[in-house]
Amino acid sequence: MGNSALLVEDDVRIREALTLGLIDEDIRVVPAVSGEEALALVEKSDVQVVLLDLMLPGIDGLAVCEQLRAKGDLPIIIITARSGTADVIKGLEAGADDYVTKPLVASELAARIRALLRRSAPRGPSTETELVSGDVEMLPERGVVRKDGTEVHLTRTEFRLLHEILGANGRVVTREELLQRVWGYDYFGDTRLLDVHIRRLRRKVESHPDAPSVVLTVRGVGYKASP
Image (cartoon, rainbow, N blue to C red; front, top):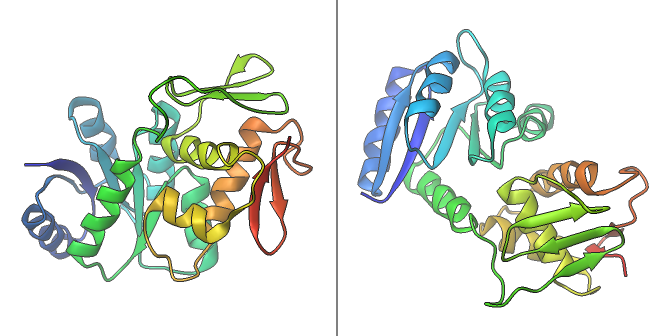
């Protein structure tokens, strides 16, 4: 079987239906019914992505997401019954890479999983190419980003996002281009994913995130790197 996912969902009907659907999509599923169980399973399993319901008994999904992100860059897709802006943004700010809303369709969720895992390694030339903007340097082939000579840890999604912007060599990269290239999925105009990840990225690579000098906004169009 191909990819593997930890499915954290306390509703037995949803959990079983998604498990069967994802297996049909060639995705191995490790089920968990609570946040506590999920955190324990991550330590001893080889899952490639976490599918995390936000509404869980005990430790809620946001806390689980924060703990998983603090431990590493394992890809996380949050599952929520609430599509409101506040709930989605809280999940993304907690460290999730993507989100889906209930009711779920296994084939669509599988497509999200594959798109997320395809960007586990950055696209780039076969030889090392250094990308520089201000005091930030990026070595795509090594997966390294430094600010003022100090290495900065980025999630896979943040790394890919920065790579697309710096790799454009000063050209404006539109919001639509970033959504397609980084997430590989048509989000039908929902740009909350991009907005939150740009904020998270700037907190790590900018000296003053509210007055960015590396990842610049081109209002109404997209983003570009400073010279």
